[in-house]
Image (cartoon, rainbow, N blue to C red; front, side):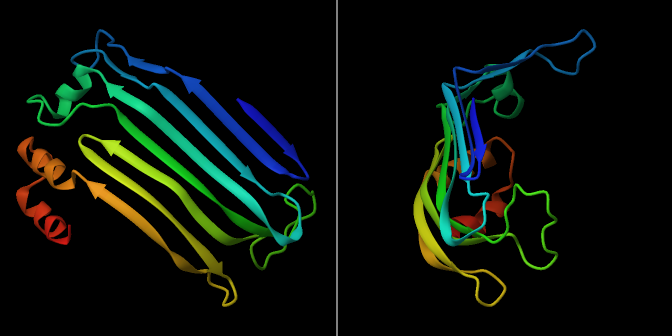
Length: 190
């Protein structure tokens, strides 16, 4: 874990390798068996400006959960017939952008009642990736934010790629988590 705070900004980052979560069974527990989850690695990073500046300053926000696997006892709770692929899951969200800070955030002086002390000027989706139970979602994008009207108005685009959604919905119907009728509209949109 690393952290820093100064007039230049706030920065926090954390990483872990091979974290393991285990839920054990107490004698009077409702659990039928111990449950566990493992990850290959996790990481997070956040940085943003805190001092007043008329020029846009960069900010970042990243989180990654790599190689999530669940024990068979967890899978057995909702997929005893093993219809869903049990490949390791992954979630990565990497955001960046710029923001103007109109008032020092580290000062003891009260912030003005009107307006926000931070105005986001641009946002970039550097990377989005979700891989889970046969579904794979990836994306990138960017937008500038027009704050002139008082309400932020984004202008930009996001490119997304989705594979495996139809098969996942069919598997969720097969194991009884959703009904066939609930998938019809989504499948037509896909």
